[in-house]
Length: 468
Image 1 (cartoon, one colour):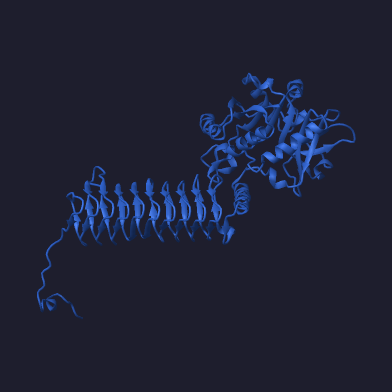
Image 2 (spheres, one colour; image 1 turned 60 degrees about the horizontal axis):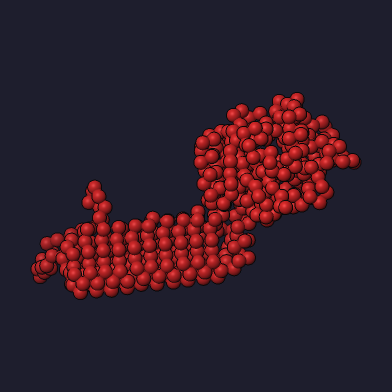
């Protein structure tokens, strides 16, 4: 019979010291929100144990916002989720009490896993190790601990020569206890029956006047601290300096993961990749490439210096040249984009296409082999296979009130400095002469020219040339 887990994430905090508009659990971090990391780690932990269970958030400050996001996050990670509300911040034990009082399933799980929403570096591996320590010694509870040079503000671990241990909060510690370097992480796994037996006995007789969850751990009980080597694992987010420090560590971890899967970084110190970005084997990233959100980069791609990609897909063998920007766009295989190109939302670029320097494309579908090489704007358009768009091309898609569509068939040649006044449709294999402004449809095989006739007056230039 597999173990069962009720996983509690303490997410009621406001995060005043962060000075951000978002409630603390929703602080942005590498394309996610802070609480997403806890939900993902708990899901992976339960999967690793082939166990049943659910995640429950104890929420408070801006609870509607936190709940709405966490529900979407639970769908993403495929985990059952519920919520309890802590109206007043009376301590961690009070938060856990709210969980048991408001969640009818809570008492039915064999074990309760407790973690904070502001510790995104705690991975499922840490949870697995912690639970193994509990099972190995048939304990009622374990607490993850670490040693630090500066333990200021953290609960001290008071080990016992006999069974059990206790945690003394910094405000309540005496001078001898303040010298202890082993501290509490706030990450626990405890038998649910043990919690229910002792939770109601926890008092608020301490310097902060709060109900401390740490009081579950006492000398003489079957509980044990589990010491971890890397204190960075348990870093919490309480201010912007800590947030930046954690983001640096998360990005480093992400790049190690990518490098191990065959992604090459020319200088990984100056590449920024969000947590959910996927990059295929054999791809190369140059300095100052930045990849946001849910972007997907295929195999054997090249992202040159200064490339910015947001929530976009780039397929195998494509090169994104220097200082190009892609947002909510799609690029097919073995295409070339840039340098200095901009693909705005709903730009759909076919395989083997070429989008050149200073070209902007928005809400347009370009089929295979299309070339838009220089200084052009394509908006609200469809362009067929193997069409070639000359320099300085513009789709005039906006009439001041509404957007209109330009459709260009396959195999067309559009001369330089031409404009299409939408709505307009060109069939296949059309030819538009340079400098034309097209405002009427052209059938397949048609030739379009729309420009004034040139008039040359010999010797007249001297009337217009100004000399000092």
